[in-house]
Image 1 (cartoon, rainbow, N blue to C red):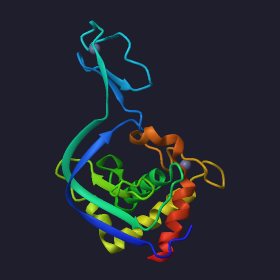
Image 2: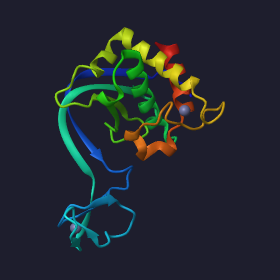
Image 3: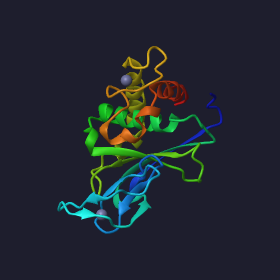
Length: 206
Ligand SMILES: [Zn+2]
Ligand SMILES: [Zn+2]
């Protein structure tokens, strides 16, 4: 991996964020009559009970679930850097979320993150962190301050290097490093080694 010639672009501010929860690409299947939903597994929805306990055989359709809200956003782009390894960007994203929480004393449930393929290229997405409260609480904006950004990177590296899951290579993740109940959709592809490798190089650059 070579980071020469990469432009790091940092932005922070207030923005509208559309969060689409598509269960890691699988989508959801939802009953049009009662709203019963579950992760799509290739099969139509079987007969089920409504929330009032009545049996329902309503028609079902496949959806991504989404909502939009205004909040504080921090975005990080590595222009010119592409990585197509499975789980690389998710690992980096959640590593930075954990690092930001520890470095800036933010509660984990107060912020979250997502990947945004702003050019339609999933091998080079923006890493977006946001305040997980409508309107924002000014938390993630602090990461953009120069001193804080470095602190966040250092803390991220320290957290990921000090975990022991996946052996010396760090070829895995656990609840002590990258995993959290909100990122269950990608637990099996999160690897702390990706974060260690990339953040070490970033720290040499800045
Ligand atoms: Zn139904
Ligand atoms: Zn771990």
